Length: 269
Image (tube, rainbow, N blue to C red):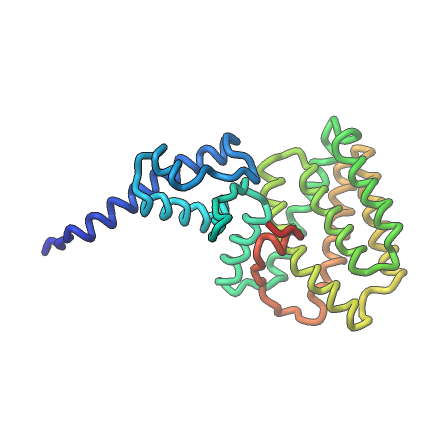
């Protein structure tokens, strides 16, 4: 086998890259461990250079690594600096969306995953001993809010999606909550687009259909409050399947489209 010669310049670039990865790894650890909180501003670059004893080139490469991972936002110009972003489910949803979009996955495929997983979340929430204090109050509050906005399709949809997010978050299993949070956020981005488009075209579901969806949320909340896990599972499965038909009705073959994390979450960083 013929050896590949690496010149001095290439060695310097490799060395700088390895140094940048070490710096990025340490800053990443501080973010994940909470030593650097969401919204914190990193010290100036000259201070970081001195602290890590690295070159400015290596430091900037480290910041670029973290920026691509969504853990910092580098601001340029006179007010430059790097803002810390704690990992968020919306960011995970965006990366998941990119993977699924690159594979040309149908939206119905995502829908089927939710039909399988969300009923499990509902059952787990119903089994929680502390559900009356942790899960039910937020679901009831969202149901009451939805009842006040039955005449506003877009608002009603947003509240309904918040209900599903809370249901996933309330399952009590952190891994399931993170996974479901990502799937829910990805679905929400598509449902929000559907709601805006159907409202603009005057094709949003009727008031009677909205009341039926609201009633399904109320019954599901009551099953969770009563601790009836199997009923909660059945109600969730039926409701998720029913509501998904609206989103995919006009284009059953539509593909998943990844949206930036701030659009999915409804926040702008």
